[in-house]
Length: 123
Image (cartoon, rainbow, N blue to C red; front, side, top):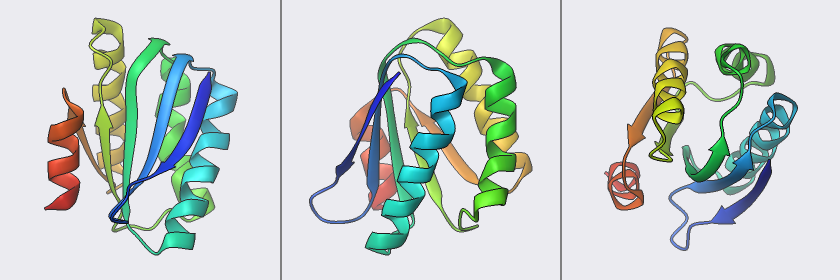
């Protein structure tokens, strides 16, 4: 997996761009980097851009991610917008991620377009 952090110009959110094959070991590293930026910038929004993901992570890694959020202290008021890749398997796993996160009371929304995700984070 290749990932990078971007800063949205007006400071409303931290952006994580994910590409290629997503390995479960890299999910924690990208989550740690995102949380570090959230805390440093004092914002509570994250946009995860998965449009260029070719191979999604295993479902077991997705299921464990919200538990990891609890472990590292992800703020309860965080809003996470995920832009989907458009691949059927990716959409299924994203829905599973959203459900797992919601069960832990994290506000995760899935979007087909970057623009829709940005609008939600700006609202």
